[in-house]
Image (cartoon, rainbow, N blue to C red; front, side, top):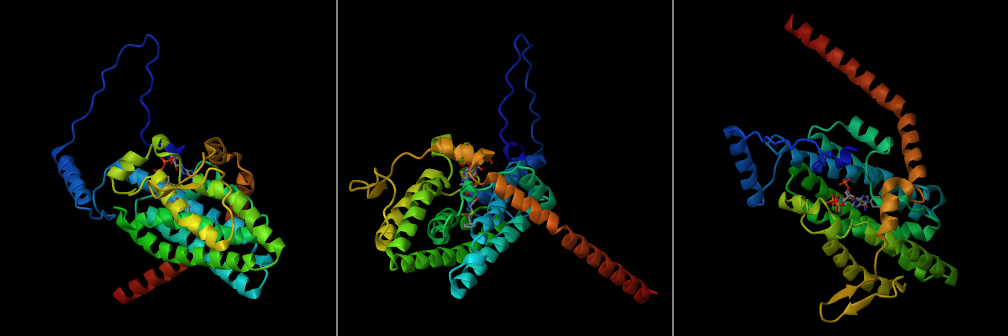
Length: 347
Ligand code: FAQ
């Protein structure tokens, strides 16, 4: 699949096949100079811009990550979108509408950033709709009660911020700049989630139980959201060298646990991990093992809501086809009119 098109492993030699010598074409002088310039920008912690020369593998890695991120934003609208028509008050409905619209906006910025790398938005969406592209595992879990919406804000957006703040310093300019605005909005998302849970926790025993149930279901998938353990993360080393990734999956996960456990205490909910304890020596919380088999099942399409999420996206794309056609027809008409006017002026 296209997301795995990088770092292809060496093909194993067929039994008995003659050993073939690998012939590596030496880089031209111009290429070597471009590479040296690129390396110098990274070493100086500078920014690579769309017009700059960049290695093909750097470009592909960015398209992979930015498009997966964009897909996550628009698929991420669906679990909470389910609750817009069932929000318990006008205020909560207005907040939720604004949040879900923000996620659509994040998708737009990110697809635009991917386009600056020469990727076509249509191709990226096609890869999503045909199940070839990855998006965050977390959005394949169901939202069963109203507290799930608060918990998504608190925990999922909280995890997203933890992962995305370092991306504001990513070496690729358009991605870094998009992330600055996205992080500001994610911060509002996290706060509205926490505030909504605070209110529920001051309510009836039934409301408090609803919050605890939601925390119990989301805690572990949220920890897995940061990606596989560093030892099993094939992309980390190269992405770190390229200044795309600043903090590893495990380090971010730890930062998230350390920041979130005290918040759970303020809320009055327990974290569903019998092994959770503060390690006085390190100052970090120790947490129990994550079910990585479950994570990979979900990433590979077998999560509770994968099929439903994809079907909803495909339907939305088909239902919106007429809008895209109308916009293109309008743009063509405007361009033709503009062309005719320019020709008349010139005559
Ligand atoms: N789900 O070697 P690594 C949000 C894949 S936005 C699915 O560690 P990398 C906002 C990974 O792609 C949430 N797949 O890879 C919101 C790779 O596959 P590939 C999304 C995952 O790239 C809130 C393979 O595993 N955020 O929540 C996951 O160095 C509420 C090996 O992994 C971003 O996308 C996963 N959780 O690190 C919206 C942030 N984790 O491509 C609505 C930008 C890993 O080799 C409501 N992305 N994989 O086939 C990143 O920071 C990185 O791409 C990581 C993965 C950290 C996600």
